[in-house]
Amino acid sequence: MSALLQNLIAQRRNDPTSKGIYSVCSAHPWVLRASIRQAKADASPLLVEATSNQVNQQGGYTGMRPADFRELVYKIADEEGFSRSRLILGGDHLGPNPWRHSAEAMLLAIEMVKEYAAAGFTKLHLDASMPCGNETAPVADEVVAERAAQLCLAAEQACTGEKPVYVIGTEVPVPGGATESLAELEVTSREAAQRTLDIHREVFHRHGLDPVWPRVIAMVVQPGVEFNHDSVVDYIPAKAHSLKAVLDDAGGLIFEAHSTDYQRPIAYAELVDDGFCILKVGPALTFAMREVLYGLALVETELLPAEKHSHLPAVVEQAMLRNPKDWQGHYHGTPEQQRILRTYSYSDRLRYYWNDAQVQTAVDKLVANLEDADIPETLLSAYLPLQYLAIREGSLKKNVVEMVQHGIRYALAPYAAACFPR
Image (cartoon, rainbow, N blue to C red):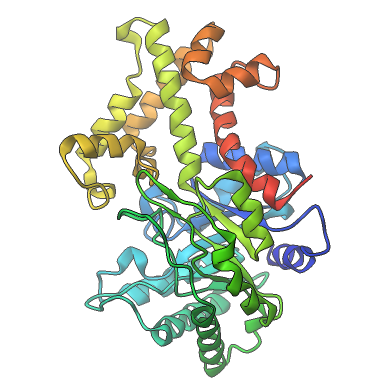
């Protein structure tokens, strides 16, 4: 897996069919299936990453540990006839973030990284950029690098198979998008990126990790892309131009771009051409999935009597109100503003609730209600115009789950086009 990623990066300048790779950061089975289908259609490899909040030794918000996530991805890949040899499993934001308020944050982070490495994850993003305990932000580069080296040592000791590749970086966007208002972002300076690289190299050397350093393939910097609840900061290539010089002097290193969700399609090709060859995407895919499901819920209300409705949007809203910990610290404003954000925010905190038992029951009921229904094309045109067009041209069946898959792949398609142009 790691060799596949290293070869792809090494050949990207000379191979017109492979310029970079997108990283699917989601644990939802429908998103994973759509991503596998996209990679199969493109005859490309697929990088799938679990985040430290989703999947860890304590189960994360999905209830899965790293080995559980691996088996879920393998199961879906096998069902879709997608070779496991073309899958790259990664761990995103691996560090103390889930326990950052605890005095034991780094000990727990080390334990987590060991589980990821032992489970065969071969692309590990070492992210120790956040303050822990009573620390204040920003954390010094030297401290971040020291903690990254500790995490790297733990992964190397726990790994029993193919050695992983690593991603480092101190200017790491907030997982899942920003919570404040955004107008413009400051791009990482060339000097700051070079300092990050130099300090990590020095600290890794001090820990005897010189043999590992060639497997540090990428660094996270801020290219000037981000999203918050209702706006997106678009990529402007000229602002990131000076960063290219860091890559020119770094011997094959590339940049990893986080929070690329919701960019204009042209931006992905521009990012890849500028050296941001790993493009992270996550909330945009579950956002697209929710749009299709809620469109189908509107179709359901038109076709069926009220007593048979799944009431999916209302059930999700009740679940979020019943257990607000995964959105309350992110969505502010009046009760009405918070209500809108719970469903429609770009940061899509709603994605934390698809595992709720009552939500799952409502999704199942919605699918069952519409599975055998003869949905008029005119209803699809009203509530699901993208799927309507695909059905009219004959590229999509009038099937509930297939329409959801179509919506997810529509959001993923610009990434695939930029990374694996045909």
